Length: 272
Length: 262
Image (cartoon, rainbow over the protein chains, first blue to last red):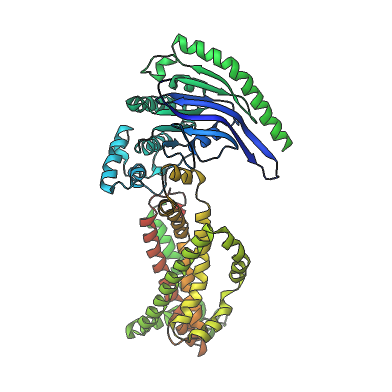
């Protein structure tokens, strides 16, 4: 391999101590490497621990066993090379869109005027140049995601971690956001780890699609390379023959896990 | 309903109330006055008492004293509440140790503290300020404590991932969150600051609106008592209006969910 590995999870195991003292193993031995400039999507049924795995890569969560390496350095504490796009709203509600984006630079000690002018550029890049003075509650869900994207990208992280970032959005907005993401990403090709439950979204966006089994104690059960040409358009790539073939192939594996995950979640509900 | 009709109706309620009061306290119904003037006075007397206070200028001194006491109580109580609230929220051990005592003191009706404060701090403004502080402190304290504790987990993680240090998290996340909770209780805490001042004055003082009411009551001057009450209400409404203005300025970032108060 010539390109360096940006994120490497080496047999990472994630476990939580439950309130009653039992230990719940969310992820059992995940082994995954994301090369620099590579866009990897993790797909799995609900509750398979894919978000947990992302938190491990971010350093928000310590693995119970195994190692995390970031650019070949063992990760201690928070992952300072990574930007994290959350599933839920994570903007600071008391800051305007502009201030929300600028804060990433201000934290580093960039002078405020400089940070603000950079932030304005990023807001324009995500198509919100005219909304700089709005507070998050005055923006739509899609617009808030755009601000969040700008907030993360302005710091120019080497790694992008995304936890179902477009999950709460409607189908059309998701596709628009996907295209925006690909546009911004193609400019400097950061390493991306993108978690989603939507297989179509994963194939349309990523270079590699990784499938996880249903939880608990889930593991990685499949790894496909997506050969679709770039630059891609999310609307059109879905009509591609190769897309369909790949989708069918991955879905045949994923489907069983989705059914298992569904059965487990309903059973768990009955026990509770 | 249009604004003017609403306003007209609101005025109508006041007019009807005052007219009823005036008529029932001066005109006998079936040979009997329903509201004896000794107990109920009448609006004309009350109004002339208010006019007298303002014309002679005595009221300004009392208003000034009560205002000063309320402001001091509010500022000191809020400051204390914010500091202690922050401290407790960031140090769960301290909060756990002090929890029963905080609850105990908060459960105490603050009026019983008034004599003690009068003893400690004399009959001047500081015993009233102290009473107001004990009321304001707990409201602000509980709100700030809650505000710091209930910062959204995601927003906090986001701050961390954006590279914020503990100090920066304090400045950009905990502090604004706590402030927003504090401001949501602003109306209550300002009201309680006034309550503390007036109750303190009522129980022993040489000046202030509470003193004015208490004096009038002491000589069975019912008109004076009512006049004092009206001035006090007007005073509180004015302060509340000021608070609303401040709130609108400071909480622009909040969704207008609780806009029912118009």
